Amino acid sequence: MKTKSCLSLTALACFLAAAPSFAVRDPGPPKKRIVPVVKIKADPDPGHLTNFQNQVGKSFFFEVTGNTTGPIWGTGVYTSDSRLATAVVHAGILGNGKKGIVKVTILAGQAAYVGSTSNGVTSSGYGVWGGSYQVEPVGKK
Image 1 (cartoon, helix red, strand yellow):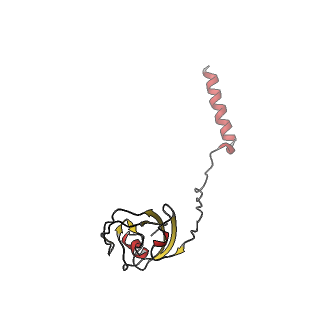
Image 2 (cartoon, one colour):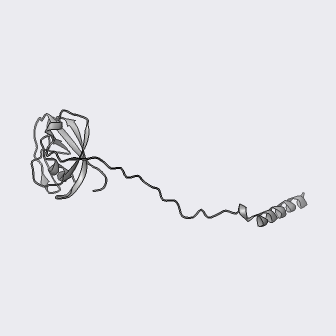
Image 3 (tube, one colour):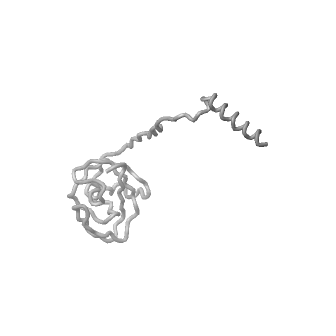
């Protein structure tokens, strides 16, 4: 038995030495993952979203230039007549004078809107209003 085991190890060693094609090969650097670029068709800034308030649940993409002036009511959820360019600055999505694409989702009217100051913009509070929206960033800031 002992001789058979030694022969097997010797035979295996000879086989591996004679067959370099069985050696582990370096796979090289990892392949880079290619991420496709998705272009979003964005409409121009409509100013406010009053004309969209009957489309509750739908989302739209707009190219907006942030602005710190213009009337807005609410925090996080804004009245449909709030200036979009001001709401995106208030929400921290775009800076003043910065252009970008934002996603706007139309929401039902709320019983009340809370005012606040954020990112250099002060929004006002308001009571019942028939339509509202929320904004989200698209891609990087």
